[in-house]
Length: 182
Image 1 (cartoon, rainbow, N blue to C red):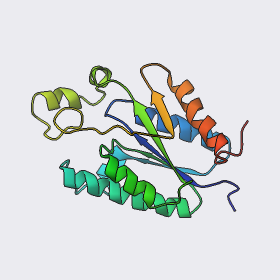
Image 2: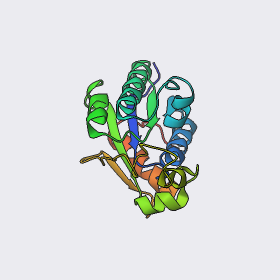
Image 3: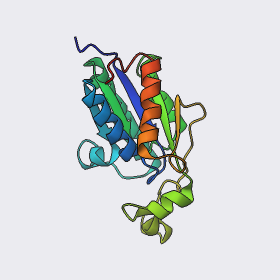
Image 4: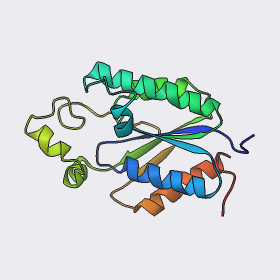
């Protein structure tokens, strides 16, 4: 009915790596080309659906589980779902993938060195984590497990947002998800 192949783009990476920036650009471009999308951003989800969760390992697992369930519902509605979350643990990302079909989930690793993320620090979180004000902060006092074989690996220290969104759209074209172009 929507004339598109639904999919979940799961963008993972450290805070400050550029996930939200790239997710917004990809969504904007897909919309411009006539695709139906929804963006599930970790920060926004934490203000609503996941507002009762903290940043313990158990709460991080539940955050990903809930987000994956919502993404699956949106996928079943025929949307291209863009999830932008730190999602630090491989196991939970694998479980999110397993909730849908094998061709419907694309892991996008938004990769930037920790030092660059700390310099960017758009919300001042790293500075607070380094002084102990934020316990269990990914990359500082809590681990981040990078993807071992993502469908897309974006290096935000080497390319700008337009080049990175081009990389994502190219993969979507090759997989038959993005069927309309300018």
